[in-house]
Length: 207
Image 1 (cartoon, helix red, strand yellow):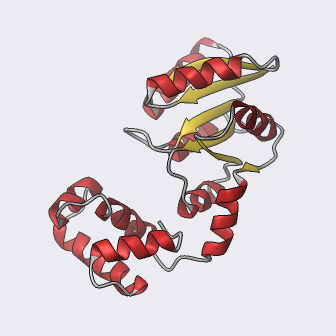
Image 2 (cartoon, helix red, strand yellow; image 1 turned 180 degrees about the vertical axis):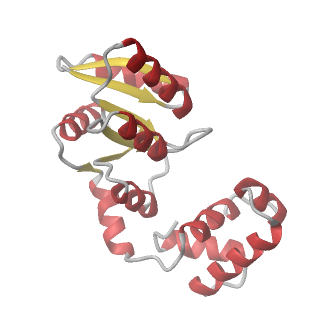
C-alpha cells in the first residue's frame, strides 16, 4: 500500500483528489492539508508519536505560505526518500525546471485524469520520473532562460498588473530594487515596459 499526503489550499480540489485516489486498491490517503506549514506540523507530530508517515506527498505548487516545491523539500529533509508529486493549475517550463533541479520526480497539471495521478504516484514511489509530456516538450523548446529566478518572479507578478510599489510589496523588496530587476529583465527580453516583458517572456516559456 502506498500512503499519500495531499496539500492544496483549495479544499474542494484536495478532498476530491483524495476521494479519487482512495478508490485505487494500492493507494491510501493519510492526510489532507491546506498548507505546507500545516503538513510539516502534522509530519513532525507523527514523527514524535511514532505514527505512520506517507510515502508520497502530492503538493499544489501555488500555496498561501511556502509553496509546494519548498514543502516537498522540507518533508524530504525530515524523512529522506519520501516521494513528491507537484501539481499546478498553471504549469510553466520555469516551474518544471525548478522542480527537477530540486530532485522532485513528479510534475502534473491539475487537468490530469485520476488515472494519470495514480500512475504518477506509483512511478514516484518507485523512484521514477513522471512528467506531463506537453509541459516537458514546452520546456525543451523554450531553451535556457537568460532571466534570473528573481527577475522571472517579478515579471510574473508584473503580469498581474499594479504599480512598481505593488510589485515590490508582493515580492518583499524595496521599490528601487524592484525597478532594477525589472529593468534588467526588460533588457534581456528586448521589451519597452514590464508588461511587454512579461508577455514576451511567457511566450518564450521563461515565466
